[in-house]
Image (tube, rainbow, N blue to C red; front, side):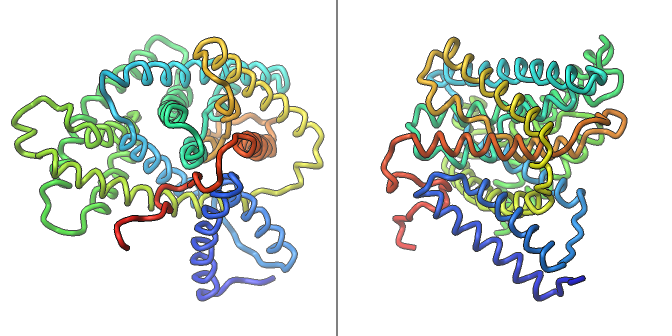
Length: 409
């Protein structure tokens, strides 16, 4: 049975980065999200590896760790994208309500379907339903460039809120003694503590980033963010709020009215830091998405396509998720529902949360093939919607960092 040597591993890793770059260029013209192409590439690599007897043992911890870092980068990138202000109040309200209501209704509907199908405890069905109800910002946000500015902005906010709400809900329902007043009080207290810590730590991180004279800044802050996130998780705090508020603080520094802080950190310095963070975060997110989705695709066995029950249950769940989104956008947001209602992809956050389901909450009868099926089908649905959304190919750029530059470099 074949084994890869060091040189072959290095060639493989670098080739994946180049391949991901090529996929981003291809997606510019064919509107297929590069993440979906990476997923299919991983599946193809698995088929080839099995055919030639190449054994690659992938630990779930590797994929989970990549996913955790990916969540941090996604949330930070979202914070750096979200601009607050009076003119944004309606947009923020509508996108937040859309993410919240669709999340809650979808979770309830999926829970009902899983309970009817598996006849297992409702609490465990809820834990499985939450990840399946989260819109994937890692797939949605990089695919928005063909859309109008109004559609793009709404979906960026909605996808970002969906991630945050979903992760917070998952953390609550996987804690001990969930459905009690005490657990609600403890969770609310932890949430308040996290908000306070978020502001304090954000100023600390911001001071380090703004005042350090060394050129190596980003990865110091990145390491501190990971430490804060992991430490918060160990203390049962919703530490993603710290990451989000840090990004929001930098992107909305002009809204800070404390004159002493404005004097310490002038707007022109903050803008330079924001641009640096945004650029490096986008590059890092690209790299993490590349390896995460290829590895996840490699871990998928296509044998589940032969199981009729997986296809049937997976299809019912996809239809339920689509109908909830379609009806909410049509009757409450009252917007043109195309192509927004087809943006139902499940991706990085869904996968990571599935890996993090505690052993005592796992559904014994649940087949992981359903998760793979939903991720593939919802991604294809969004892709088809983007293909039929009319706009000239030369106006489409999937990844902002791959846009043509005008600065002479």
